[in-house]
Length: 417
Image (cartoon, rainbow, N blue to C red; front, side, top):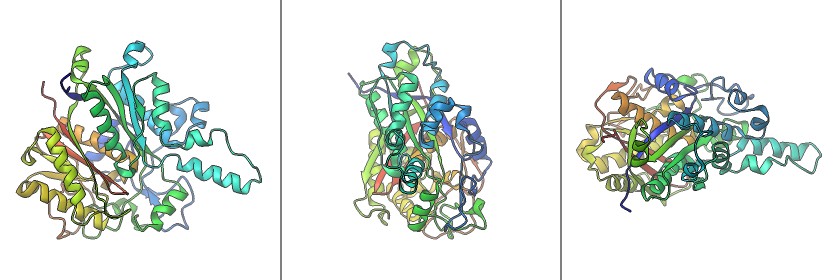
C-alpha cells in the first residue's frame, strides 16, 4: 500500500483561555493572558504564586460524579478534549459500528501524569497512620491511563499508547498517530496531550529549578517570550486533542477537513537534562527532518508556532535554530508563541499549539506573542508581537521541545483536494 495522506477532521481544546476550541481561539486573537494568582490552593509561601489555571472547570459538568472522582485532573481534561474532537469530527461513538471502532486508535499522552493524585495519596499514606492507599491510586497516576480511558469511553480498539516526552509529548503523540494512519495500520486516531501540574508540589518543583517566572506582582505580563526581560515560564494546565484520518476515509464519509498533516521531525539534543543546546543543534535536526518528510523547502513555511516558553536560554536557542534552517527566509515568515497567553501546558502544549496553527490557517491570521516591551538582540525575528497579523497561511510549523532534550517539529498544511 502506498503512503496515505493524513488529514485533521476534529479538534478539542481545554485551556486557560477557554474550555473549547472556539473560546481558546477567540481569546488568543484578543491577546488575552490566562495568568493570575493561584486559586486552587494556598501558594503564598511558594517562590511563584501564580499560574494559568482552567477557568471555572468542573469535571462533573462533563463526566458523571463517580467517574470524575476516580480520575486525576489530567485524565479528566483528556476525556473532555477528546470528546470535543470526536464530536467535531462528526462522530457519535454510540452509533459507530464496531468494525470502524476497531480501526481507530488512541495515541494520547501526558508529560507527567497524575501529580495531584500522587501528592494527595502520599500525604495520606505518611500522615494518616493507615498502611493502605486508594485502590485507584496507581490507575489514577500512570500517564498512559488517559489514552486507556478515552478508548473505554468511545470503544476505540485500535492501537493505544502514550508517548511521554515532557513538553514535547503532544507533538510526539500526534506524530505517532500520523505515521500509523499514513502506513495503513489504522484509519483514524484521537491524539494529543494533557497535563495538570498546577499543584503545590508541581509549582514548588518547577520553581526550585528556577524555571518559573517570579513576577508575582504582575502575573498577566509574566509570560513574555523573546522579550529581553523574560525570566521563566508560567505554568499552565489543560488538554488538546486532534482527530486524524486518512484522506480516503474522511472523504468517503463526507467529513469536513480542517488541515492536512504533512510531515514530522524528531531529534534529541543529547546535551543536558533541562537546558537546551545553546547552538540549537538538536532543534535544527528536527526542523530539517520535518521539512524533508513533508517534502517542503524552508521557503514554503509561512508561520512557526514556536516552543517559545519565555525562558532566557530556550527562546534564544530556538531562534538560533530557526535562523540556521531558514536562512534569510527566517525574517520573512511569522513566528509567535501562544504560551505568552496560555502559559506552558507541558504535555498538552504541542497539541494546543497544533490547534492554534490550524485555526491560523483557516482564518489567515497569526496569533500574537503578547507582553513584548524591549527587544533582545539575540531574538531578532518577526515574533508577531502584541497584535495578531493577517497573512495568507498555506503551510505552518509547530515546535515542541521537552526536558531531556526531546525535540519535535510538525508541519501542517491548508487542505487542498
